[in-house]
Length: 329
Image 1 (cartoon, rainbow, N blue to C red):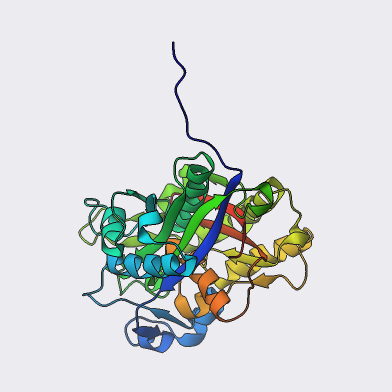
Image 2 (cartoon, rainbow, N blue to C red):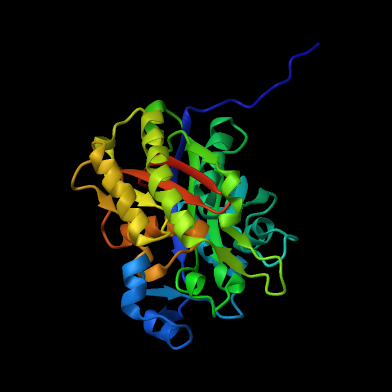
């Protein structure tokens, strides 16, 4: 029997472009206090959010994915014709068919590329990045556009104080390409997993509302105890130590969770000057969009530099989690 031919492999993958977008409409804590029983200080104390961005009815999830993906493509210096695959990480499409990825690819001008959606909720971008890196390493694709895009406002009960203060809309993206030498590899191995026994802590209600429900305290306890070990495992798999990490970019779920993860990493040897993403303060929780959006915002603000080592870790509904070390483009 003849052996099947496989594509030539490469040593790994790297990120060469970033992009993001957010709606223009800002909703402050004081704005929410006009509708539900809350106040600015209560929200700041519990989740660390000061304001968030909410899309209008005319702006779709795909609109935001197109904007973020187009910016990442432009930032990378590649052309639309160079992209072999588009992955959109999302959990908030209002209908499962058609998927977001094919529409997004078409509107960006990417023709004939593989295109699919990936739903790992708030861990979605890290799942997508891990998948893209493996596609590139295996020779299945040369350039993969990974987009995290969410319009959570479509799924919120705006009279539910436990969720309406947290979630928001936006999109972030990265262009992943081949690293031709081992020294050029810029995406480390993924550390990922799930806790399906806790699936009901974040789910869509099966009632007339069909809105998002979250057991906040249960998720908080899980995230503050289970996610730092995932981050440390990703560091070890990349052949590094916590002291090698320049920037920590966790999913922007809750500022207290972000701070707890950073504290654990410093206890395990991370440097005191470790920079920690705090995009949630002004962006809210944007699920799969939060990590690439935070990276892009930190770069724009001069808080990270090309060549630095960043640790990404996403976690959320499923429950699902994933993380990897990357080199900042």
